[in-house]
Length: 434
Image 1 (tube, rainbow, N blue to C red):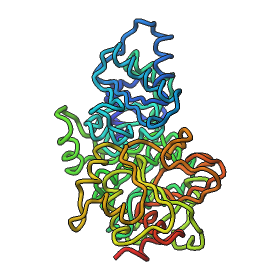
Image 2: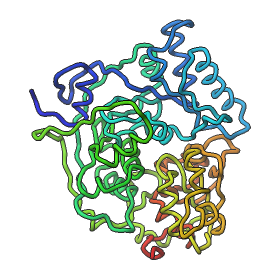
Image 3: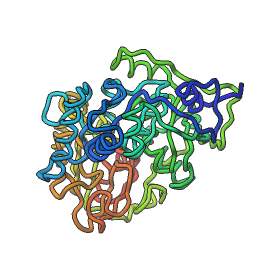
Image 4: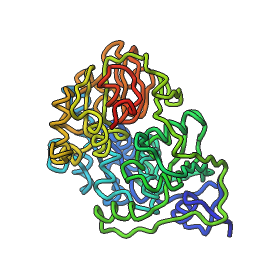
């Protein structure tokens, strides 16, 4: 039997095969299917058209519905999308609808899945969102799919997949105190390009990666798609087990690389030599060092999204912002209601994060959502209108991504965004971190 990578092992198990190789086409059983308010209505429509108006989903407990993108708005069409999810959940008696305006509401789907225990090692997760790959941080195969594929999974519980080859990125040594996971992934994307991992698994390994918190690992896996990757994956360890074990009682089976597993590509980094990185407009691979962009004047800063709106991200931003005041409009949006609570309860030197941010002059949303990360309706919180120059913790900076096509978006870590908010120009966080 051939030696397999983690991704190959998960797909082999899900396909009921002893072994698979890159390029094999296999029918894979899904453990979880997630959809949200943007793609859910389309998926549901195709499901009903193809399987019949009275058809039932293949497994009620494995379908997760999370409205998160266009929810805090007066836009009637956006509201109708959420209504369709509600009606479908009621018709199918689905237990996992995290509905807006209810105590179960969560926020951004990729972080909500993790917090609610839907991310488990060794499993297969499909989602109608390209950043579903975030869950690969949990030692599972997670990838984004289109509405038609999702409708097929909804009806059958399986999907035909081509097994991807694996690219391996190893970070050795100690990560400097001013470097975050966002810097690691922007470094990689700058090296290989936005098409450098097209239909490949991206595995992250090495001492530096395994010392990252679960939330920082999620940032790494989240942006795999920005390099064209099919999925990201990280080995499980005590950090993984502690996070998952606290959120679900379901059993899971971790996977590891076989000793002789082969990779299509491997790159090693000396973590100690990394510097804060920024992606310039209008592409995540348009990389520069933060210190090289000190002449770029900003009109706003944004901290939020599945990539930059987790509690860890806000704690890191607060390390820079406490005792200081922002020089440009600075918007903060928690990714989930759990994070929103954390802004009130988590303290630094006895002060809640929310107080630190408000004292610094930030505009903080208490409502968890995707908000301006995907532009949204005109009344979306933090949406870019006109030729703004924004530095953001989000994951994409294409023209119009955060609203106006005239806007320019620079991507960076919470440290770099917070430091830049204080100075009003793109700033290496080493200038302000003590």
